[in-house]
Image: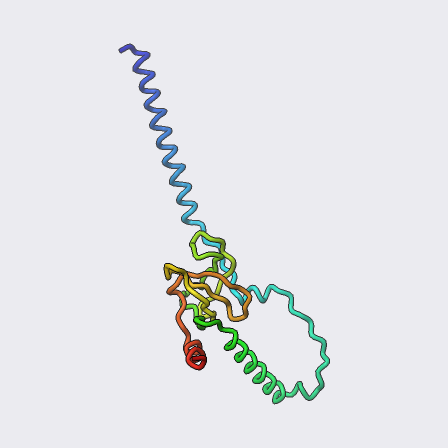
Length: 171
């Protein structure tokens, strides 16, 4: 073997080792940046409502309605009407639940982890569980206010006592 052959071999060997090392470093940097990037901040119902414009209500109520007793009575009537409407709105097999995952849940458009994120629900928020997927790993929920509906991982919602009482009274 000649001197030029040995030099060509050494140069080729060094270039090959350099390419392998460079590819390894580039791959490592790619995965490190993907794993260290913070996830997208979820948008919870109370944050979404704060960003929306509040409707302006004209003051056309009579002065008597502004007393604390009258306000309390109207609040009780509104709360009773709202709860009766919500109880009637449950479909057969649906129940009320509460989010138990401490960081809240992302609502997805389909029962898959890679499907589009269409909303979120906060920890301890009340939801209505409508159905579950065929493999029992996802449940379809609707927020109490009806603003969002979609799929979340099963096991992150517990049945609330209020929901059990409602089902018992319906049967």
